[in-house]
Length: 262
Ligand code: LHQ
Image 1 (cartoon, rainbow, N blue to C red):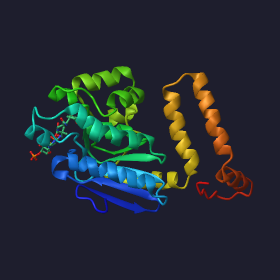
Image 2 (image 1 turned 180 degrees about the horizontal axis):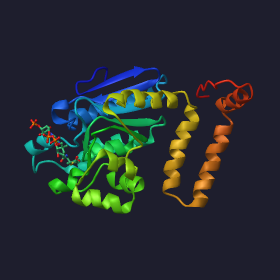
Image 3 (image 1 turned 90 degrees about the vertical axis):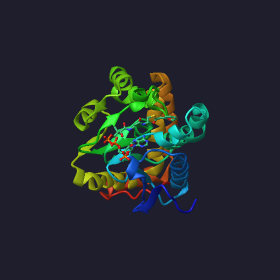
Image 4 (image 1 turned 45 degrees about the vertical axis):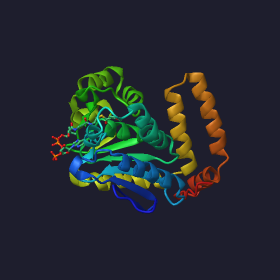
């Protein structure tokens, strides 16, 4: 896909930005938007110029989850399992396993599967005023698209259950205190803070960053012995990279290492 109707994709200074662009619905997810989003993440994956992905929303919302209008129009006719298999699962898997750091730049309200999208990113930077709801229960559904996996790992079992069972709206400060987001910044500093973080990650060692992402995901769901074995495999690979050799040299010559991803 060369151009997109429902989102914007831009690349600058080795950082790609995907901005969901259906602001009138707080960026609710239609089939069309989900297709474009999956395509855009794949193109970020393939683009060697890109080292970091920022995911955000245009307007006052980050993402309000499944577009309920398009579902309402075909109420009863939809096979939700097939819908999840076709649209959501490949997207969440692709985001969570992308070998490049991903940052959700949270500009406003986040609900339902929109929250799953934010949770599937590696880091979350939110603007003051952002709000978070596992809205599924409010319409008689259950958390999907990875929320049951990511949420208890991020904020703990009890808080995850409270959010999922009540659909409560969690405010920005609570989200920070609970570890749902990494950073909370004034609205007008959201882009500056996010891109400063993104550029710093983009100047890091790409191969090591990819392995760190896989390693932490592995460690979060394995026991200590398995985790150490996996770390060892990754460390052997990392220690063989040119980037590692260059960075050690740069340390002793007191220079800033230039990581090339080799
Ligand atoms: C929307 C939406 C929306 C359409 C706001 N759709 N228009 C489910 C089914 C099957 C398979 C896959 O997975 C899923 C997973 C899910 O994601 S289920 C959960 C779906 N999402 C929700 O239930 C959230 C619905 N939205 C809300 O609760 C509120 O809009 C929130 C809390 C997000 C924001 O509230 P407000 O700030 O008060 O904004 P608002 O409600 O006034 O919304 C602004 C506009 O956006 C409004 O349109 P209008 O024409 O009246 O201005 C809404 O209708 C529209 N909108 N969410 N998901």
